[in-house]
Image 1 (tube, rainbow, N blue to C red):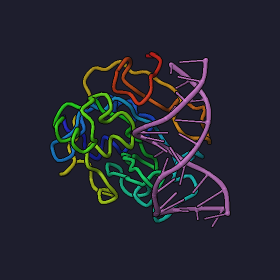
Image 2: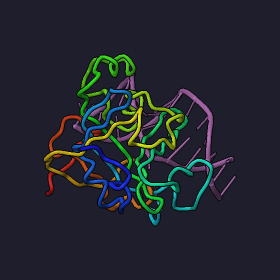
Image 3: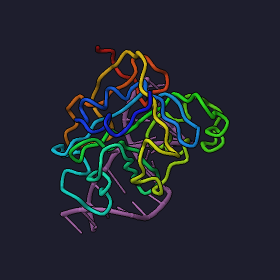
Image 4: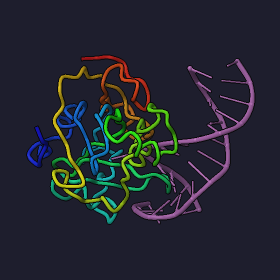
Length: 185
DNA sequence: CCTGTGATCGTCT
DNA sequence: GACGATCACAGGT
């Protein structure tokens, strides 16, 4: 089942865990989402926390669109916009389709290193700032609902503000996570 | 396994 | 002018 705008027009805290196990393709290349983090409007760690700016405009747009931003001046990071200026950061994929393309873009043949981390993931999928604001239910994006997956929960990675909340979700035991997660539900 | 560091630059203060 | 929702690599345990 394809994921459309209605799927994303909810709280990011509902949407983010449901994205674990979903399939994400960009121009037919991608795999299974295994790691996601939630960022909401009242969250000091969220880009939308201090209101709308040129960079975060997509977070204030309609749900079901991409928010892509540059990280550390080097990498790109992909988010799925949810309701109320919130977004889910897509942190890791289990590569399934287009392995050769991803390996070429990443410069490695190690499957584990193709998309384990937000910067690696965007590089593997060929995502850049040009994809910021694009709808997720139209090409080049394709998104399919998750099957049965055991979810693990933990603290978000790489932030200093609100670092304590358990808003990181992943597939328990997956070797494709950016970092391990403890089993929970 | 772990910790530390450099790269690199747009964004916001 | 400081600081990142990161990554790769180096070195020590």
